[in-house]
Structure formats: C-alpha cells, structure tokens
Image 1 (cartoon, rainbow, N blue to C red):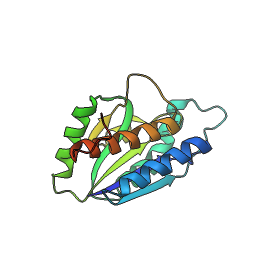
Image 2 (cartoon, rainbow, N blue to C red):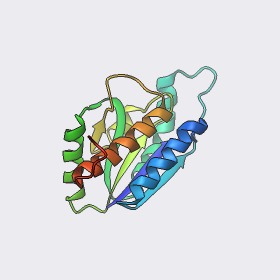
Image 3 (cartoon, one colour):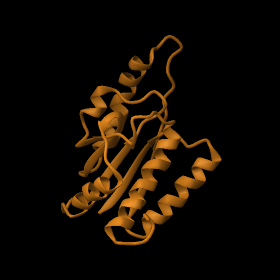
Length: 157
C-alpha cells in the first residue's frame, strides 16, 4: 500500500520541515510514500475564512480524487482514536487490498464541508487545535508509531 500526503502549502518552519522529512524517511522503510504540497491560495482582503475555504475547495477535491485510494481528511470534527485503536484501524486498512491511502491536511483556515464530504474517514488528532504544520508532524509520527505497533517493534513502549 502506498501512502499519499496532501499538504496545503509549504512548510515554512525549518524545525517542522526537518521533523516531517525524518518521519517520511522512517515511513519509507515500511511503505512507499508520496508527499504533495498543494498550492496555498490566499484569502481576499474582505473574504471571511468560510468563503475562502469554499473557494479553495475545488482545487483540494480535485487533488484528493486524483487517485483511487482510501481518503482520510484531518479535521477537528473528526474521529479520534487511542494510539492502539489507530494502529488497529491502520492495520485493517493495510489489509484491505486497496492500492493506497491519502491524508489531506488543510491550511491555516481549515477545510470546507465540500472537501470533508469527499473523505472516507474524517480524522481528528486531538480535541486541541494545532497549527497545520504541527498537525503534519503529529500525523506522520502517529502513522510511524502505528506501523511499529503493528510489527511489534519497540518504538511504542
């Protein structure tokens, strides 16, 4: 199974970028990995965040639907898991026979409902809110942790 990460915009924080690169490299030991940085649109001067997200939605939907894969979108209104629960969920997806999984992490304004509706699963990393760059790191780390749990490796105590 191939993992596809769709990140809106570039990671500007050098420390976050180093962490992202590290976890992508770790994940590549187990599965093929692809990262796509989608062009980040800028909101208009009089555009509220909801309008902006709706305007950006077609671009994100097109990127998500490019591949015939299981689609996961990160959102604060998504399903939460324990670490072991997430590992079990991920394990079931790995065994599903699908060619891949995609993970969409939006930008600083979040995602429009039209984008969320395209997902097979809406995932929340926490009830807390994180920057979109931090969410990228947390997602990658949790996927790596899940793979080590699945394989019985000693990363997760």
